[in-house]
Length: 173
Image (cartoon, rainbow, N blue to C red; front, side):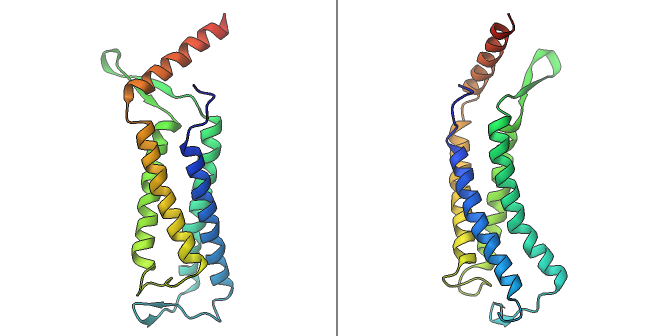
């Protein structure tokens, strides 16, 4: 079971693809900032150099998180057990943390979609930033839903971990 490709790995690839479009379009807007006038709720924006740093960090952060998630999905397939009071254990690993990463990423992209797109938003109309943001957001929602569907049954995760332990014991003989 640990050798199979989990379906949400492909969702991470789509989030990465859309985040790259978003990041490239923001960089293009930054490079051409002297020629482009950005408006928010009908008022022209005067964006400082410090603000541009924050604006550029968000899409490139999404690219970095998506890339790292793809690599962590490939290389960190095993979870570790943490024994707690009275012999009960908690599964900890990338598979469990991935849900929080997907949730936070979906939340951040929702905030960007909610505040920066639309009729009065900074990025309204048919452009690469608009499609990149919306594509990354929609794919992150699908990613989160796929992760929830895969991890809804704790017993199947525990069985997978037990099978991993049995395979390790057999391999060490």
